[in-house]
Amino acid sequence: MVGLVFFSIFALLASTGSAYDVIREYSGSTFFDGWDFYGAPDNLTLGMTAPFASQFGSLSCQGNVTWLSETDAISQGLAYVNNQGHVILKVDNTTNVTYGQERNSVRITTQDAYELGSLWLIDVNHIPYGCSVWPAFWSFGPKWPDDGEIDIIEGINLMTYNQMAIHTTAGCTHSGSVGQLGTNGPTTDCSQPSGCTVIETSPNSFQSGFAASGGGVWATRFDATGIYIWFWSRPDIPQSISQATSTSSLDSSDWGTPHANFSSLTCNMTAFFTPQNLVLDITLCGDCLLKVFLRYRAGLSWDYDPTCGSSGPTGLCYNDCVVGPGSPLYDTAYWDISYIRTYTSSVSTPSPSGSPASSSSSATRTSTTATSISSAASTDTNIADTPPFLQPIGSGEPHVAPRVSWRMALVYGLIIVLSSAPW
Image (cartoon, rainbow, N blue to C red):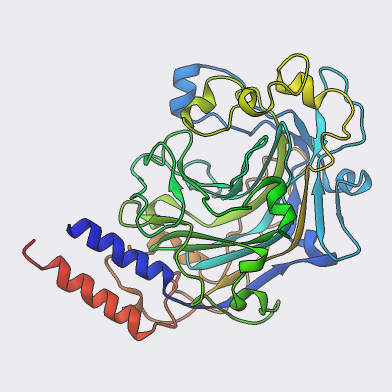
């Protein structure tokens, strides 16, 4: 009983509005100024976590793409800004790939890392899809997986829904479906290879249905109280977002219940997550995709065979998709993005993380002063210890706290009363 009450209270916290100030907008002709291109073959997809490595040995898991450098991606037409001012990232659909070769694609990572207390918006018109196609918009800390990973947009093959997740080391769990619209995946242990997954239940969150409805917007609140992810199809985007500009503050009071709610009640965010770099990528297939690894995602349509196994003569992802002509199979394998905006509850500007990464780097750079609140990461206290409305307001505070309504104060008052009640 008391557990349900606490989860309900934190669900109310997630839907309680807060105001945020813009840190940065990535859009238009300057979009790529704040990103690094990976510039190497995909040797990271389904990266080997310790539990997986110990069970399956040295099984390779890379995707069947080469992520190009910025120069090559632009010259080959895989990264550009179109006439509408939208950013396009795509898989090569013009090359006839021979057996043993990889197909070219793009992976980019923000030069800035974003602290607890930040909010991220992405307005997408088209998500890559098709057999073998594996797009993702996600985040990670400088030391993966120790510093956490957040999967905001992810799917593969002919999935019709988006899947959200967090990945951590042992000790972080997902509290359940209370306070979220999405449906939980097969495990609540976020250290498992699949992470703690939440399946989007709203229509048109992926594939052709997403594109046909005009796309949509995701919002991710990265906070000490939890990680909350919202999705709106184009017709349902709240006015606070649709009327926002690249410089205006953002009020989340009309957002409602998040689609994924990873509460700090069962996962101490300050212990499992450090400042996060944002990533956009598209990979293809992956050696583990057809076999044992994705059996961890029981009940989900991540395997190649069920949706795409009959799309070619061999039934193998690489042979039937990557090899051969790129069109028409990869004609829909592209991102079309209007903007990505990052926000914070206190006015601050992220600092670049140093000189650009080399083309062979693992693209795991992070800013040492990503925002003016970055230095507080290691000393940040758990939200249960210090309620936001009691924290001092200023640029040194990582929590989403400076503008607290009477509703927030009431909620925390209820927490104090309930915690002392003789249940």
